[in-house]
Length: 423
Image 1 (cartoon, rainbow, N blue to C red):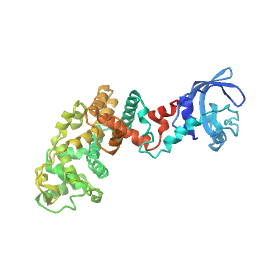
Image 2: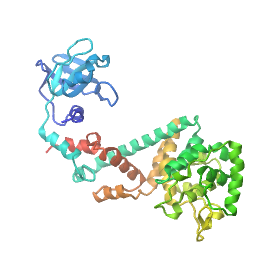
Image 3: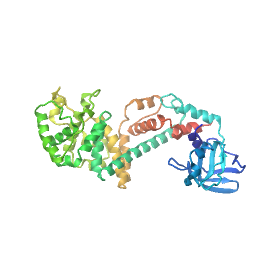
Image 4: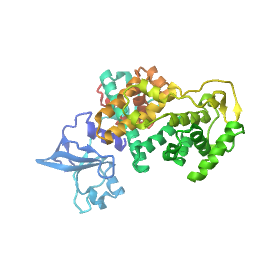
């Protein structure tokens, strides 16, 4: 037994809590368990409880042992003076407020079967704790869980976007540029792309966006990769341009050793990604504004599917020739940029501007995208969970990383359903 299970019993009352009495023998009726509090302070706020003939409204605090009240120093904290009931598993000491008043206590009963179900879930060694039980959940409840998980994931990404906007003095364009760069790094080069964008503000690139060579010089120069590149005519031109621009803007390049090339396909090398990013910046006009009003993936493909400059037709690395092959920004990369940057920013921007239709558009874009193909999604499909599009796959990724991996079954809609299930 731990406190989270006690919270669960109080919130959901999976087994009817009838005939409850305080330690002094007064009858207890739970009219409203209150709001679960995940911040500091009592565990439940604004509860409504009948004790004897009196209805009390206030907070409820819970512990395994009642003496934990003192171990946590609640007896000296005025924030706990409004506690109307102390709910415990084992009573070994009367709880008192900082005013010296005694708080009514309830030793809550619970069946051993509930504790067993809880232990089976959180101690499970399966890929997800409920892998062998999830098929017991009806389709309607699974669908509602998917919706909630997607909402939580979007909320977290929206919060990150909003924080980034604040960090760059309320410039949505600068924040979007930085996050787009971050997305260009995909999994392997997220950090160096993020640092590259921070070291090279969009306003500097905007001054030279009509000159592709200068945009490339700024990006490759700031990446640090230009300094270590083998010389050829193109590299010499970049170095010449960068030398002038570096002095003009007082720039400091990032550390080139941050970039990862190992175990990447050549088409995914950071040099190719930087060249594609340069072309996107050069070719685009009001990209942020256009993308925020977009309604279809076809339009996003049209805007983002750029081809880097001709030098990169037969190069994967600076100064090293390779087989001639076109290297446009691929559909899969554009999908990931859409999922990780465009959708969260559209949702956040719509909320910020009071445009609910943009929030709906963001979710519709996810429904237009195919489900991501990775080991997590494949394993969900193996245990019978349907994954039709990116809306579903994003929700399942959130479920796995935020609930299943952390064994937070007691807070998961599926875990709650399984724990409340009566034999």
